[in-house]
Image 1 (cartoon, rainbow, N blue to C red):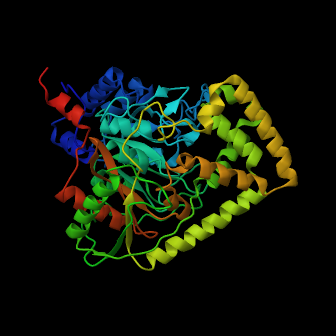
Image 2: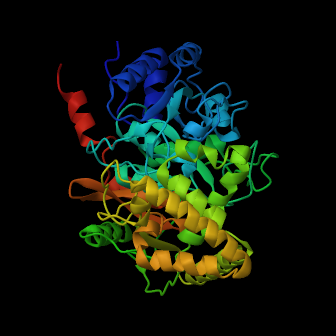
Image 3: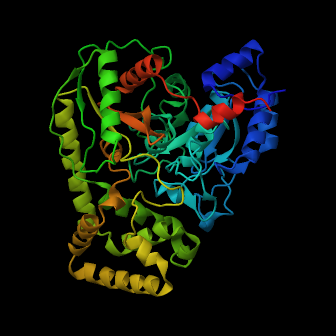
Length: 511
């Protein structure tokens, strides 16, 4: 009988199934037991009966045959809750399975055990919701695991399942990977289907997984990447992602090391750790460091307003009555978007996107890769909604009912004023960002690759204050395989823990 879930990567678990060392049924039973006993709050829904039925008939000849997986709750699995991680849609049930999880499950042979927690509608880079409560980081309980794929990251780093799905629309794979010591890959836009319901806006979302190893993420590409007629942006899958690991000649490739970009302030110790890890990677790969000047607008605020405005269409007649059911930050953000988002702000966001695209193109004319930090610091308090240690205007606005009412009244006035002075909205957003820059710090290092659509990954790069930090590597479009190779070299020669140390220690301790 298996006492605890597999603590190595998913590929090695498949090998264990094929050799008879482990069985899919025992593995599912161990995962379910561990999830039910866990205090991480990484799962929002479990379906043990379905998982055990699938495990009994698992085909271990498939790439992920029999492997228990978590599915991010913003993905759809037919018959399972489809809540958007919000009380607003707490009773909604998915009527279809998304193409990416379908391929993972049916083509790959993975066994879904349940849904992992996420931030509400994927709108924050944390995992705190009214529906699910707070999800914790397995490296240190009471610390955030980031978001929006925070539950998947917590489950994988916490030893509950060896791999789980994620999605990255502004950093939502890479950010939690950085906070929890995992490998997180955001592919070229379109690499993995968003079908069968592929919204164009925000035009930044890429599906993927939270993985313990590079080969797990590469094998996932082999299974799920490829053209989908329901997603016009989907790309062909050349295949051979796992088999090709180590095949790219990286010698003399040019790389820029920029610890921070877009004006994001790093916390103490992060730059030194990043430079050490980047130096090791450069040496291992035989690359050449090149100095470049990358000047990027901070895109987060204007793009956030545009993305939040799309929620109004989903809410329909439920808005604004549903605001009290929502996370305060998302409710207030939606109100801000309703009041501030207009054609002028959309034009500013589009102008920023073009400016950012041109800046990235110029850099990739000079270098093959850019190395920067994944997050501004290590994991902060799990209950916090931003990394700021001090109050910001949202904290103030949500702290008292009178202030809430006054804020709603002010936003109504702004909405009217916007009709007369259409440039007012952008001026207000710029003023807020200047006053409270931390509101756009989380995601400020990652969102550029979502806007530009290029591949980027987060590689575990050691710790600061005993908590993981990530080294983010950016590459030009369609060169995903080179990022796999860079990460694979670093993993092979330097390595990182497959799970949080406390998890491994507990599993190794005799009961």
